[in-house]
View 1 (cartoon, one colour):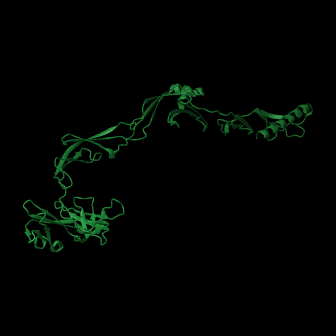
View 2 (cartoon, one colour):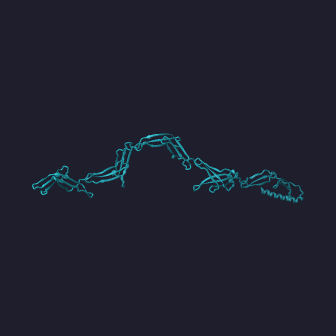
View 3 (cartoon, rainbow, N blue to C red):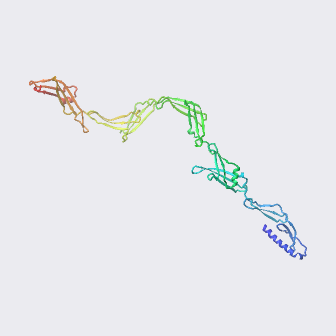
Length: 452
């Protein structure tokens, strides 16, 4: 549109020039055309006769109000125009960019953050931001305590049910607007509570009175930085006494009921008395052996509480096997036997049990030749002692058994030659066995007259 008006203005100027040149020679009556010509400041008609450029009806434009064709933004220009009501000439004007409007100092927003570093230390940051009120453009700058661009002082520690209040001072923003806005607004910020108390109700501490007539309960928040404690008091304590049994002494169960059953459920306390457990009174144990005696199962019942007890042991090759085999050699002095011995852990209920597998009577001595010792007393009476030793050998060892028998007060008989003969008749001794009577027989001892 502007280009069209520019060309029209040039044409009109040329016509004006021609008209001035030939004015002196123009002798016709001017007749205005129907189309308006215009310049930036005025509009007019031109004579319609050929070779005539007479300008007629010249007037200033009669412009109406400006109409905005394109709104300006913070960074881009806009445009507006107005139209002459007579000739419809359009006058265009550029609208300058508005530039950003970041508002007042109070419109600056500050955000604070507490960061834990890899070394476990805390760093506080402060981010200042201001937004253009016309567009989405913004300015932002972050400073931190790590760079000593701001100072953070904790006034109140953060914990369960408690905000952290931190005082920030001495900001050093490169944007002076941010520094001025910070100093003109606030220096303290509050970190909202982000957790509740974590009471560990699985570890309630109960404190009983010395006579168990009262009980208090407390539970502590499990967070290390929180010392909050909840407390409950018993509103009633019931008791039930139990007499001693085979396995347990007498005791009393105290049950405390609290004023807040939801937080503190009823709590029992078991208190033992002075009577000890009576112990089981076992009956007679019974034993069931395997056919090859490799295992043994014992059973018993308590006569007081009727509790049943059983235990099984198995023979092993270890030196401490609970089932041990032993054998006693048959000799002239003892009978022989083979036996298994089972030993149980519950030695009271199941005493050591021996099972004789095979028993054999002791052997008779195999007596050797008998020897006889005679002696004569001052009273001329004789004594005869018979001795016999066992000759049986077992495992390369000769039996040490022996037997002696003595007949005393034997009177001598003097024959015609004056010799004295003593006779010991073992056959007539009733205390001797028939075997020894035969082995000892009748023994004589003669003393010649010369010795007499």
